[in-house]
Length: 318
Image 1 (cartoon, rainbow, N blue to C red):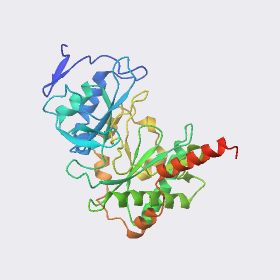
Image 2: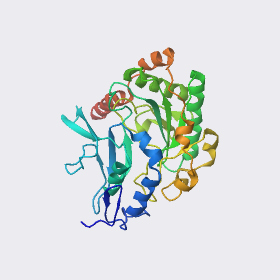
Image 3: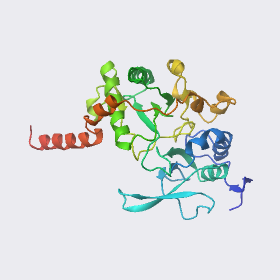
Image 4: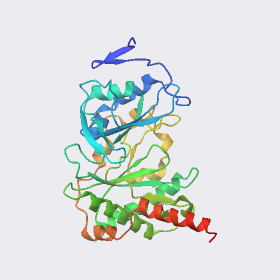
């Protein structure tokens, strides 16, 4: 296939095609955005096993973890055994401009790096809470819940940075010292969510089962261990191509997720990189937070058992 143009040795094709129906952007605009943001995006992806969400013409979107056979040999990869699929997965490491451009040409829209680096599978770098709104447009509720998390962090002696998810919620990142083991970080995440919920249980909930949330913001503590979270500045596969965008805590009440998309983000930033600038240094997790979290059941496991119990009760007519 003839290339429309070439950048950094990467042949770029079909640049003037719409990415998908309702995208409001062409493939060229996606590639231009990624290229303009490369000095901000690549540091967050560097040496982290990468999953991407791609959408090919006329097909449904899909998440790609394993690199395809036609991947150029200059794309660095790392191999990891996946218990779920019982196979080795060859993850890409997006460490340079031409790899990012190659992904853009592959119609990779979303970039989901692992929480650990390739050389340290035993240590996550961040504690993360993912705040999901109830049904509908309820970003003001998400903001209220985010401030609860910030208060819980302050009460615990920790600091975090916040960004829009690029969808309807926000992500709160708390960098942690990599000497803290994965299970302790996961436990501390559960405890932090519980502490935020206790500050105002009318606003936020840790209930994993949707029907139990009663119109409250869900404090999702399951982004731990082998999970991924969409990178700051990554586009999202939604109409208008919104991006996950860092926001100052004091500005959170004045923004909407739709403010930030591939057409606006570069101009809003200028030469700044607010995600890097506002990110606290890695922190030790307080012992009492970790201890509290280990006493809290893992949400997915608890929800699975509760779902089975409710299904059994329905069958028995209880």
